Image (tube, rainbow, N blue to C red):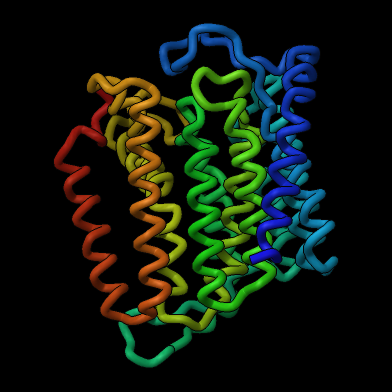
Length: 340
C-alpha cells in the first residue's frame, strides 16, 4: 500500500502547488480559451495549459519513484513531445495534422524504447493462446497510442470532466495492474491519478483553469502507455479487452463522433456540439449533474474491467463484450449519431 500511496500523494501535492503558477503563466502568454463559438460551454475567457502542472507533477514523481530505464526515459521524452504540441496549440491554434505529426513521432520513439503491443491473446479460448504480431506490432501500437491520446481530448468539454474520468481510469488500471502483479505499472497509475486529483480542485465547476490540449493529450498518452505496460503485455485472457472497458466512455464518445461526422459528410477532425456531455446538457441536466452522471458511467466501466481481470476467463470476456455491444446498439437507436 505504501508503494502506491506516497507516489500518489507526492504527484498530487506537486500539481496542487504548480496550478496557481500555471494560471498566471497562461494569462501572461495569452494561452486563453475565448468562447468564440457555440461549442464552448463557458462564457468568459479561461486560462489554458493547466496540463503543464499535471505533466511536471507526473514526470518528477516518475523520476523519484520508478527505476530509470530506457522505456521510462522514452515515456518521458515522448510525453514531453505531446505536451509541447499541446502548449503550442493552447497558445495559438495549430492544425490537427501538425498535432498528429507530433503524436506519430512520439509513438515511434516510444516503440523504439520498448513500449509496444507485441502479442494479443485469444479471449475466446480456454487456453492462453497467444498471437505474436510480428511486423504488425508497430502499426497496431501506433494506432492504439494515437487513438487513446486523442479520446480524452474529445471528451474534455465540461469543467472537471476529463480530469475526473482520467482519475477513475487510472485507478481502475491500478487495480488491474495489482491483480496481475505489475508493481511499476501500479506506481505509474498512482502517479497519474494523483496528478489528476491535484488538478481537479482548480478545474471542477466553476473552473479557474482548463487543462487544454497540454493536459488532455498528455493524460491520454499516459493512459495509452499504462494500458500497454500494465495489461496488454500480460498473457491473461482479458489483456486486450480490459483497457477498452477501462477507457470505455471516452472510446465510445470518440467512435460516436467519428461515425456522426462521417455520416453527415463532415471531416472527422471538425468539432461539433454533439458529444455525450453536450447531449446530456441539452436534455436539461446541469453541468455538474452531467459530469457526475458521466463519472458514474466511467466507474461502472472501471468496475467491469476489475471484475474481468479477477475472473480472467473467456466467459467474463464474452459477457462483457455482449454488454458493450448492447450499449453501442442502444446508442445507435438514440440520437448520438445525429448532429441536431
